[in-house]
Amino acid sequence: MFTGIIESFGSIQKITEEGSNVHFDLKSNLASELKIDQSLAHDGVCLTVVETKPDSYRVTAIEETIQKTNLSQWNEGKKVNLERCMPANGRFDGHIVQGHIDQTGKVTGISDKDGSWLFDIEYDPKLGNVTVEKGSITINGTSLTCFNSGLGRFSVAIIPYTFEHTNFHQLQVGDLVNLEFDIIGKYIARIVNGYTKG
Image 1 (tube, one colour):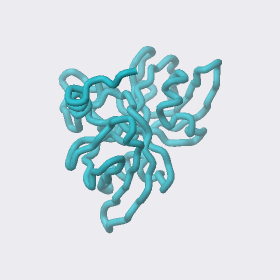
Image 2: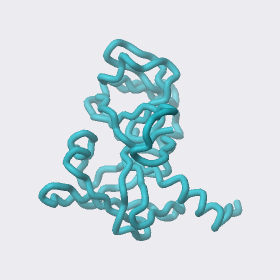
Image 3: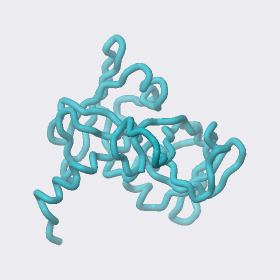
Image 4: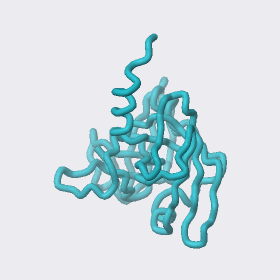
């Protein structure tokens, strides 16, 4: 389990395809502390460490993960937001984050608010995911509060610290981002709407 509080960056050094799987080699200051079989969130995607070196490590993504996230657009040199699992005695500074991406969204607007930045996000509402005003959302692994909440759209405000210490400073209009919607909201939606037939 994660909380959406980004610890560090990983820089993609190498991308290797093997059958339907894709291996990502990343350089990070967290590498020396990682262990094989450890879960680590990459832009909100929970991936398992399969190899470690003093200053780098490798994770593997399966085909389903590639299809449901923005990993297919990753390239060498890209900065990725990293968060290790929350320790049992840790503080809940963000919200409950599973590291399971629900769908991608698209950045449709970025506004400089003279001290903060406003990001407008749109997503396909047909998948049944929703946001609520002042509710929690995870974008590229970052726990945020959404507003201007509507069908298939919402906005988030990014303070300077978050802008500098996550890869929000690299995002541009048109970029795809990984979205994980609030788990409590998803359970409530399932209880209310039930399962669809088919």
